Amino acid sequence: MRRLLLSLILPLSLLLSACAEEVWAPEEEVQRAKYRHDAPPSLTLITVVSNRTGSGGHSALLVNGSHRVIFDPAGTWHHPKLPERNDVHFGMTPSAVGYYIDYHARETFHVVSQEVPVSPQVAEVALARVQSNGAVAKAFCSNATADVLRGIPGFEDTPRSFSPKRIMAYFDGKPGVRRSVVYDDSPANNGTIVVPPL
Picture 1 (cartoon, rainbow, N blue to C red):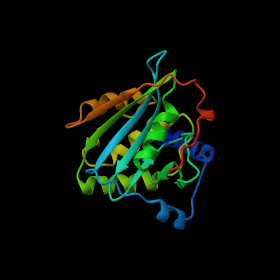
Picture 2 (picture 1 turned 90 degrees about the horizontal axis):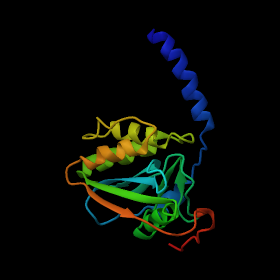
Picture 3 (picture 1 turned 90 degrees about the vertical axis):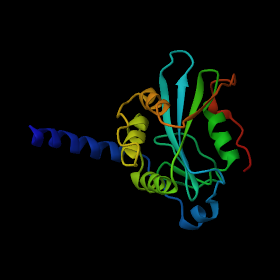
Picture 4 (picture 1 turned 180 degrees about the vertical axis):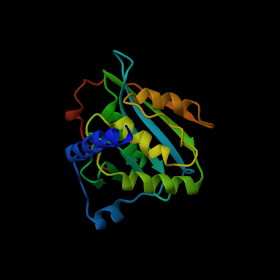
């Protein structure tokens, strides 16, 4: 039975990785863009939630360690001055994070951020995990986020799910979590949002 399951899962995983859009910024761009945030190390789960149905629409993970990145699996967000490597965006300054949230918060969606303090060592594990994950296929954002978290000390029991809200509920139970919610009545067309200078 196990052999049968593996024979079904492996082709599916190969198919999904083939559907993922791979992006690899040059090393000099990544090094130039790296941003060290002076706040304590943390992991911040960002969840986009439908205002109409209450369902989760997207999951992402902001990692603040020796530098700050956002893992935006299968996401559509980008900034022309922020290099990307397979769903990891470098140079996440406060302005960049604000732009990311503003891009997703519309009349149809709000954005929930849940920041959990971690040790510097755990933050570095998280940075390594997101950077080694690879590009993610569409609709697998919460699964990819959960898989990354499950390899980080203190987050091994993160639930795997196609529902971003399951991971959001899990983060609500983490010690020291700080939660914020952003609503915006902008039209539901984030393709026309003005890209701010950073």
